[in-house]
Length: 185
Image (cartoon, rainbow, N blue to C red; front, side, top):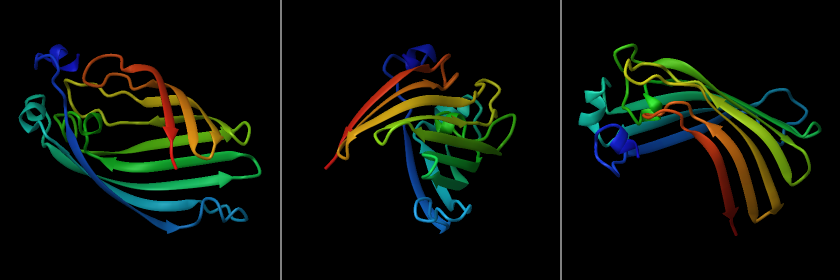
């Protein structure tokens, strides 16, 4: 239990409000197969941690912050491959769970990337990663990564199995298996 590990009481939860917007600037990831230009978008996310006193007590400068990012995505249909990369400016500590800014820094540019390969029309294998700033002396941040296998037996059902490693997020060693089943109509 995270709350117990931090001395905040069993069952304690960090909570955030996140608002975002994204605008496609150029390109079309699917329809422009004859061009090497990826689909490029710019986005913004404003995050507010609802435990301001706690995040400031661990060294955060603020309980809210705004990320700005530029992303590029390209689908290579002939090769059954999707590639995506993002450059993000962030002040967030542990994606905002521990506030924004700190004793080491008040913001940095971070990278995110993903790749997925279609093994069949219904089965994809992929990986993702995300670098994170290391701004708080009390909470080392690690690279996030995962590998996944996604299966879509019909257009209404998908199943994803993944191994996720988030490193240390508030408490040590946040890693494990993930299973998601999604049904939509």
